[in-house]
Image (cartoon, rainbow, N blue to C red; front, side):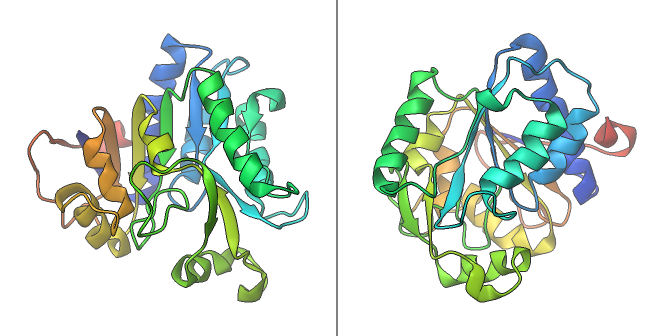
Length: 255
């Protein structure tokens, strides 16, 4: 596991984008797993500055709310369209998001899992981590080998996401999320974390026991994980077995 510690939150996006740019240059038809949320979104703005030809890149979103109408500005389909597809000039036909408006969400979840496998899997999966350790919408208690499925959001997650909606009541109760087992099948996991409020859960995920109580702890089971964290988020980390920590400062953090 590689851990890059950078001075500021904005620098995490730059460093993560540099890692992705190297992958895309070596594999122009790379399959990316894209995430939304406060920590991952700056990656796409930074990646756009690399001016890569991404016309053959394919992307799969991690999750989607169930029950929002098509075109809702806070649906992840719309966030991905604005922040990823448009910003990076991806072919919309190459970008997939779970169908949260499907008449049968469970079937849509199974179809989505199969679609990822059908393209040969994800090359690099971008991740953030929630305050309770969730990856995507895999809440505490999720099976470590879980597949893409319909999940009920915890109240804490709904409260955290309420800032994106007009009222807390508008936050959906359910979602479709890639499972932890699905995420672990990606060839490279890229976790981006910002802020002192994430320091405790990041330390638990990387240095604590592997347990369903902290879904992010499954990162310890993957052979190729890169963590990019600002100094505040990394403040409680202890370097463990198999972990290589690198501090990035100055111009190197803004390339």
